[in-house]
Length: 224
Ligand code: SAH
Image 1 (cartoon, rainbow, N blue to C red):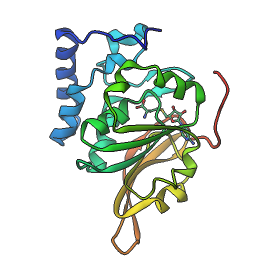
Image 2 (image 1 turned 90 degrees about the vertical axis):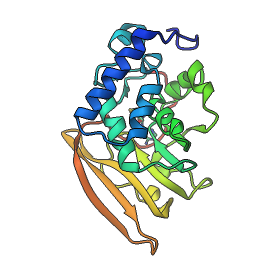
Image 3 (image 1 turned 120 degrees about the vertical axis):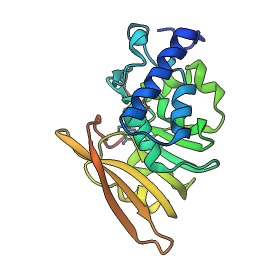
Image 4 (image 1 turned 135 degrees about the horizontal axis):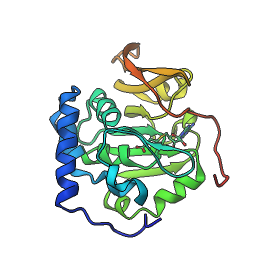
């Protein structure tokens, strides 16, 4: 895998990205900044050579360690629900390929992102493109714990299927903050947008059906 070596981003890739943005608009993504970030980030950089030609299809693809890069629509939708503002401090659970983290960083956020698979964490450390984003802080750990020493966060995003709303993540959300978490089992999940009011009370809204890989507890130090 040539993940550590820069790849080219040519007019063909850029053209395919414009088409992808058009598809996302047709599927209901309205936030212009999210669309601009999708257009700016070369998704083919994040994929194995074998999938590179399909990088701008609106589909999830396998990455390393049996994990996936989320579908572009899902990334855009979760990002839109987060209402990202410049300088937001965001906690992400499930770094995966780091594509979602790059979208958030492109919007001007500082991203604290946790991955439980050591192999995947190390893989992203070698990724040439991640070095462009000093506002992405990566951690190898268990997302159920969040990052108490960096809390509180303006926003929390979980990119794996949580069996329940992880209480520590809500505790680490600022009053006035938003968390976006797919909750359910392997038959499917509801996207929940959870808002914490200024007085600390928490509200949930259901925002549609999705399928993610499971949010598992504990760290995994083993190679896949
Ligand atoms: N945001 C990613 C999507 C990755 S898929 C992207 O843009 O590519 C979900 C990821 O969540 C997987 O890499 C999986 O290993 C990770 N994950 C699952 N449970 C976790 C947990 N408890 N803590 C941290 N990461 C977790």
